[in-house]
Length: 196
Image 1 (cartoon, rainbow, N blue to C red):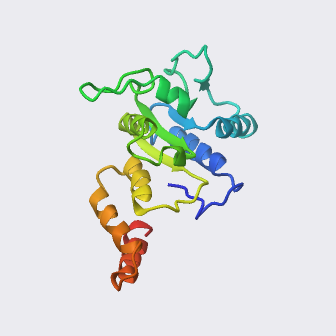
Image 2: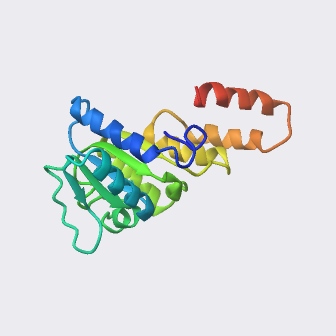
Image 3: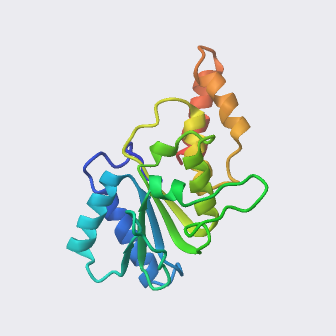
């Protein structure tokens, strides 16, 4: 996960992630295209970076009213969070359906993932369904995670669904938000186990 703690706004997270995706494809480390889900403004930056640095990529711009799911020969498919939500049907009794969740992706890049920080929202559930169809996931975020440890968990859960338990993060919130002797120990554990 790229966070603004590590790469500040304007550093070029979009370009770095784009080049990582290109490298993974060229090295054969992923099969299938890169699916890039972002806000409208980050997609503008992505288009510009592609034109400037890797114009040879076969790109499907899956945005707008006349979008067609022609993903087979693409190196990269870009779409917005709004389109991903609109085109994905989530039924609790059935598997997710729609063009994006019915395709296998080599890499899912969720740009400005803070728009889906709440794990109860449709946007987060759509990202989870897309993650399940991707071999790898990469989250980009220029917005600081300032609220709770559960916000951090909602991001980590998207890239490593079985690695972190939500209950642990809920307990951590209770310790971090109170003034108690365990607070310093809990913060040390977070620094060691989560950010190491």
